[in-house]
Length: 232
Image (cartoon, rainbow, N blue to C red; front, side):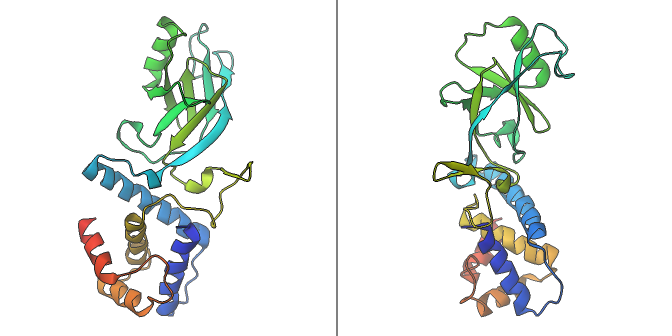
């Protein structure tokens, strides 16, 4: 599934009702990202499971070595941390949006703690511990002990913020690349958009989907869609 498929279905419904209003693709993406996040949060609360389709991999990145002299957030001169600015993640309990943060070899993992606790760990613990901790201030992520490179698996707030590997070259994600969402939550997100942002009634949505089946890419089986909405 691609974000262009989600936008396609929304535009097909728009055309079916002969709506003269213009829908900007980037605005649709913004709204779908918000609905995606809300449905992921609800699904996780219900099942306590992370669906692998929600995940994206952050390829190897470099940690910047920072001290109190470099960063005003660090108050102790004796402490050295790693710092990187990473894409924002869906806000989930226990920072599960940052599904896995590790060294570049994905062997040593880093557990989330608050920033003050991170500072305390850096002050009192041995650096050769084989694991580590991280804390976030906005999109800035601090890790300890300092490692030169990192990698991560995340549930990005905006999936297009995550670059992908294409033929050995790292490039920006586009509307034509896979969008990290399972089909059921994709359907729910589209229907949220149709009902909340296009002000369509539930019955109208089902009728329009039935009438446009041959053109739609994701919104299939209106009966199943109604079932999905009731479960959501």
